[in-house]
Length: 154
Image 1 (tube, rainbow, N blue to C red):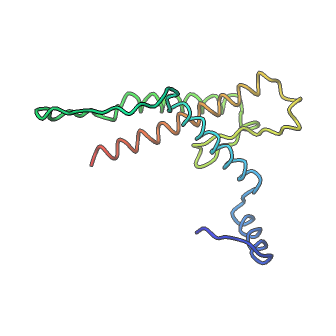
Image 2: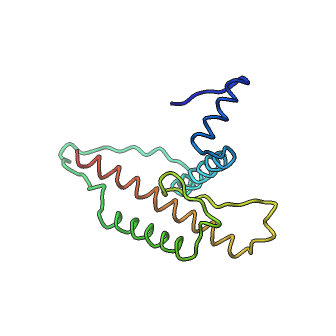
Image 3: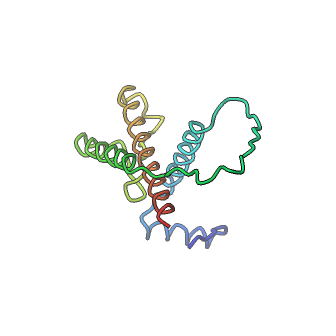
């Protein structure tokens, strides 16, 4: 149910809906921006940086039945183990003070305020940012693995 709020009445309605759903608009905007940065970072890792060459292939007529299995249970378990380890760290070190979990605890967002930067040790800030990236990457990988698994079952 997506609504577009433009005039004063709609802005008042937006405010009411945000209160009813217990949504902090600034934090939601930060979440969307962070997700966008994460997607760009993952995409940049997946793309090759070399020159693109157009390769032409000629497939022999006698060539048949060449398929690979796209899903590996071992990789799924690795992703689940990584998420479990990170969640143990989250609970053990009470990272909830510095990191918010969103979307059913599948996306992490570092609570970072640039004007308070001087009060956070650089090593800790790096640790929190790295923890968020690893957590988001593992959850994204698990999501993609489960999608591939579901597709291959049909």
